[in-house]
Image (tube, rainbow, N blue to C red; front, side):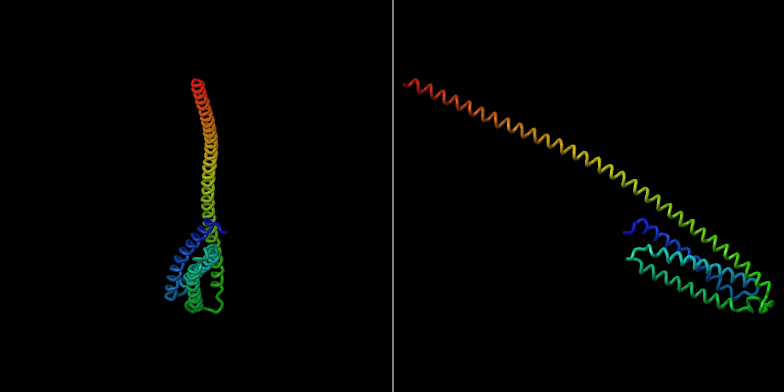
Length: 225
């Protein structure tokens, strides 16, 4: 059976990734709308930024794909539908970016050639920068996951401490009930002893009265003889 704390943490982390993805999608859409209006170096820079945003969006989608497994099965269909919508939007943005990147004349402007060496070097530098940025973003997400894990661990420790205190209270209450039960048992025994003594005293009293009555009758009978 899954731990509710883990489930809550997974749901919170999925929502956090989803909010981050929406921001990236908005930024990516803005960049894609700007690219057709640019040529040359500005266009290449804009395409590079869009590619990095797209890579980041795909990384977040991968994280969301993992985290949605921690969502309860009762709400998982809704989560899956939202995930598919985001994936469809990202795929559409990828196709649009690929179409815009294929326009090499607009990309290189007046310097367009089939094999521009300077542009190849620039592309390699952009790829290195893109890899560095992806590494930094991945590191940031790992740190965020670590922070949430520490928070979850703190909540779990607090819950365990509360349960331990409640267990001590229950133990003390149980001991008090056992002690009270002992007092009740002793009181019942005392009352039973008193009842037996009262019954014994009553029998003795009846016996004495009976003897006295018999003696009186004997005296009266002896006087009339």
